[in-house]
Length: 249
Image (cartoon, rainbow, N blue to C red; front, side, top):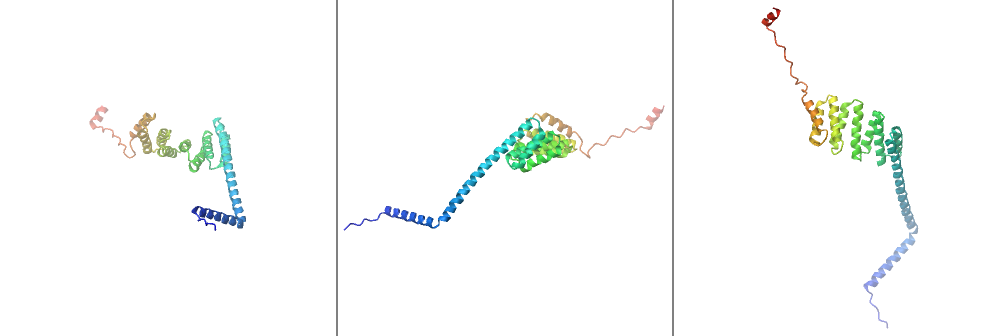
């Protein structure tokens, strides 16, 4: 009589593995249609992801190519064509980084064509819808200020120049923006705002080349008597009767 072999743990594991495999195979056969459908869905999702990724890459490439044309036209001084190309780019790829730069070039071209009201709209569009690039945002602030200055709205111009330095103090053009703010506030009769702009320049940018000019303008403004505190004019000396008689003699 053959001696019975004791079942080991290894045999039990193998048996469980075989049983599990058979159960999974049976389940697949019984649910073949569902399994195939799931595989098909996964394949479709993978294909769609690839198509979307490829489409996005192509869109970025096309947008970059159009932006390159905009920049070339801008450097050539063909500002009307810049506006046309930039508008085409923003219409097709609005919201992209390339569209944001195109909006900025459009605004700057409109300034150069002296279409200041249109430039205001373009700069505001960049500030409200894009503004990811801090340097271009600061340049849009000063661009808006320049538009208002050309339209002789000196108070608005001063506000935008001042806002440039207040919100982006590290912007390389901040000292000049404060100098322009002081000048515009002076032109609008807002002398106290002009004083604040010059003081801010002196305090925050002591190494600026504009420091001597700012100090001179500040001294001039501070020497002007404030409204309501002007000294009363001196009355002419009264002539005595004796003096009058002497003159008549």
